[in-house]
Length: 86
Image (tube, rainbow, N blue to C red; front, side, top):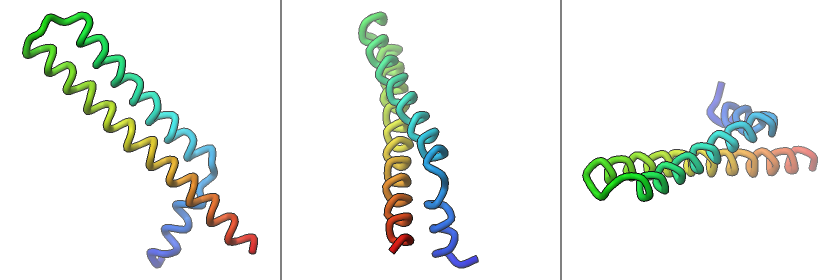
């Protein structure tokens, strides 16, 4: 199967599937925010606070990447559907 067909198949997935991916990214993003907030409020300034904050920032970054890739997938999926109707 050529790469073009694989990409069209990937981006032609139902929006419900892409929305699940977006929801996962949003949840991870907010869990990361919660980790950063709790680390700054509950932990004394120390190495453990810095490590907890770093973990929170990594979770925020992962959630952002997952959510934005889902948004791009939904956008491209809509463009493909629009172009196919023409």
